[in-house]
Length: 78
Image (cartoon, rainbow, N blue to C red; front, side, top):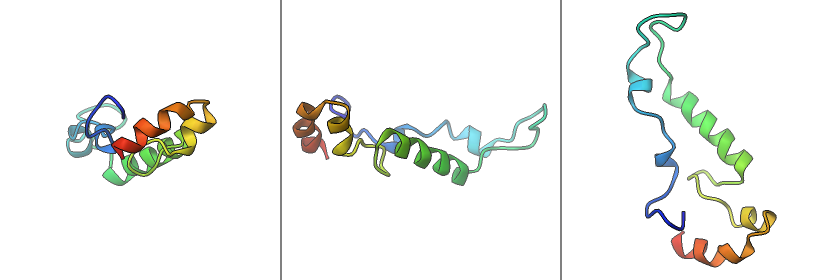
């Protein structure tokens, strides 16, 4: 977040082909990953990491990890 301008959840999405192009063969033939499923998984991952719904660490996360000194720099980027 500190080093990458525009950091956020939009960088966590898989390639759009996974949501649009069905699998051509194998046990998942004809399937693709629904966008709602990707959102659900990202929500679960973000919550487990202590990040907000935009994929940004909450202010509590660096505190909990002993990185309170990073909070001012993170607040400047929010």
